[in-house]
Each structure stands twice: as structure tokens, then as C-alpha cells.
Length: 408
Image: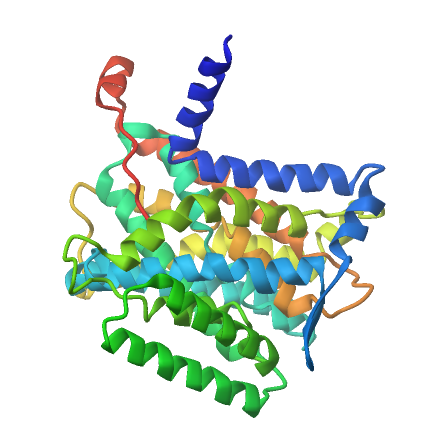
């Protein structure tokens, strides 16, 4: 096989809709392998490597894993914010009639898993801090599994899953802001307020150079880092001020251009690094007792059972009460498949788990066990069920109609 053929195959792979989910899964698997090999001490040393940035009296002192979670993941949240703004202004979320059903499904998909978790951990206030962990959905993995079924999946079902995940992201952002912020610094929050005002004025004055917004956003991130509110929220706030349109060039959208430019970086760099840094579960000494500890068990059952129950019940109530209707060419059996896939909570669940239990030393549990176990089971169940209920497509028909439409 020539170099040119290898290059073409690699490009074809990265063009696949499921490529992001595959790379993310491989990063997590690699982390698990390294964490349970002779390289564990080196892996742990890398995570705890101190990195200090200081300008005068301003000093940011964190280890590598915190730089990844508080710094690199800002880019991910920035992209999420851009997608949310576009969807609300001109996308699927701009039509109120299309918004109600996925919004209700997302609310149920966050509330019921949290109740599952709380039921297992209500006896301990410290453990109860992890209530939001099973409430998240990983859009990259969930859509990746859905794409494995090819043309058998109705477009409306893909859009429905993506819309649920978008509302899920909004809920996760609010949860992080309201429940995982601490030790507020009013001086730093004042600086954040000033940067928001500057961004607002730039937007109103039709400033379209995204570099200018990013520079102000960097100042906001530093202030947010010192404020006690989680720094990644700076990415979401910054995205809200990026202009969708350009008065001087109607054919150029600063927001859509930036979203397009960041998509591959986030999918193939930011999220794999995050997964590698956070999914390295050291299993030495982990027995059945830890697997069935109330924290990982509550998370796993919240993802596997709580998610589909919440999505299905709230969706059914919405339709039954006349508030919403099922997407065109989508039946309840297919909605159940999507509800099962919503139990894949990997990326955001790991992120929230780090916020909830990151400061606890010598834990008798590892919340990541529940996240990985629950996400894998949910993904397998969702795939198997959808493979059973979706209409069959002949191989030649599939190949003839194959495309790679991107659903954000």
C-alpha cells in the first residue's frame, strides 16, 4: 500500500461522522491500559506535573490535569456555546414547535437520573455532591453509535437526539454555574462583568474580527478562574457575543466560520486529551465492593435506567398533553432507542465528576467506574435495540445513498 493510499484512507476516516466518537473511545481505552500497566507512575506524574504561569503579581498555579480541565476544555465549551447560539437563531431550536419535545425529554433525562443517584447516596452529604454526574449526555459518543446504523436512521431521529443533547448541554452549564462554584471573589467577578460589557459593545458596534473577541475572552477566563465560578463557563459566555452575521460582508458569518474551524480541533485534539487525562482508572485493588459502592452504582443505574425512563416519560407526557408531537417518520420504539443512547454520559459526566469529587483524597470509590460502566452498557443497549427496530436497508441501496451529513 502506497503512502498516498494510506493518506487517502486516513482522510476518509476522519471525514466519517463516527470518527470523533471512535477517537474519543480509543483515548479512553488507552488511558485505562496505561493506568493499569508499568507506565502508571509516569502517567500519574504527568497528571500531577505543576505548570505555573505568572505575570507580575498575577499567578496561575495548577497541575497538568487542572490545566486540561479548566483551560483546554474552555475551547470545548466555547464550541458548545457557538453551536447553541446558531441553533437558537437559525437552527432547529429557532422553531418553537420543534423545541418543546427535545426540551421536555432533556429535562426528564436530567431529573430522573439525578433522583436515581440521590436514592443511593442520600445517606451521605459528601457523596450526594455527585448527583449531577449521571444527568449528562455525551453527544459525540451517542451520535457516533447512531451513525453505525447508517441510512436506516431517519434524519429526524438524528436531529431529535442532537436537540436533546443541546438542551442537555444547557442544563449541564447551568448546573456547573449554580452548584459547582465556590469561594466567590467579587473583585474577579467585577472584572468578568467589565469584559462582558466590552464584548457587548463590540458586538453592537459590529466588530467582526474574532481575534479581538478571543483576546477579551482570555481576560475573562483568567478572571473567571480567580472568581470561584468554574472557568470553562467563560467559553460559553464568550460564544454568546460572537456575531452571526457581518454587515460588511453578508456572505461571511464570523460565528459559523469559527465553529467550522474549531470543530476538528475540539473533536480530535481537545476531547481525546481530556479523555486520556481523566479516564485512566487504576484498577489495582478494586474489587466487587468498589464496583457496587453507592456512587458508581448510582451513576451507572442513573445512566442505564434513569436516562431512558426520564426521556421516555417526559416525552410521552408532552405528546399526551398536546404540548408536542413526535418527529416525522419517527415512532416510539425509535424514541426508546434514542433514550437509551442518552445514557452515554462520558465526557460531561467525567467533567462534573471531577468537580464533585476532585478535592477528596483517598476515596473509597471511583466515580469514573460508574461513568464508564453505565455509558458502555447504555451504548450497547441503544445500538442493539435500534438495530432491531429500525427498518432494514439492502447493502447495495445503502452504498448508493451513503453520505456524511454532519448533525451538530
